[in-house]
Length: 279
Picture 1 (cartoon, rainbow, N blue to C red):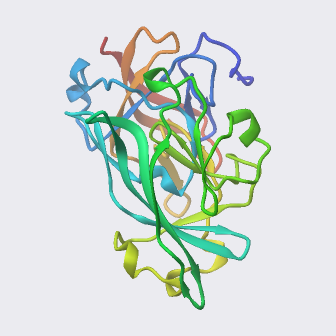
Picture 2: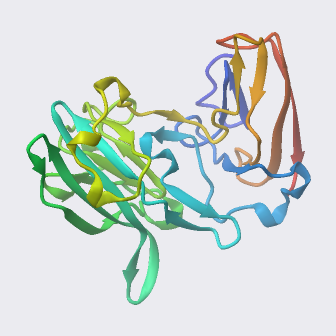
């Protein structure tokens, strides 16, 4: 089909191996959803609907920075250490917390992070910054994101200004953290995630080869749901079920891909899936 991003009358768009929802950067609707790894299809019901939905968005190496509790709907940082490269400079960074204290109560998307520059000569000063404002106007999320620079700290930039600015390194928007590079910004920042949460132990010796660093890409709610294995000619499916909100914001469905026919490395001829209402 032609690009439908400006239309409101679709819920899922199948384009190559991508499945997009009508919301976020993929459409003008209110669509989105949440992924439930290793879940039984019939277990996804009204109780599984989250209070805040995920939408198709710009994504980076920070894709999986948090653990989502489906019962309390709370986010907790895994504490991974990330390496951010801009030219010859490399910083290590860690998300400490998603919640900031306001009047004695925790408020979501008020981030605490810490970071330090890495050089062959050693590790620079560790800087901890609290309450980086990624609330974007609260649950409506209709305000500007929070922008941060390793050298200058929190920045007062609108989204419009940031779109043309090389001054920022990290962007915080609700539960999404992105880099100034790739599809997310005009800069050249790229990232790499280390398999450790020991921030103090990371040094320049842990910096990988340049080609290991990745630029931001587009992440869909139904992300990397399957891949074609050219060696075996098989389609390998992710073990997950998705709850999807409709483009009008009024209904929820559970979604589960079953089978694809005529699969190749770039696309397939047809797909069979389950898509049943849950509210």
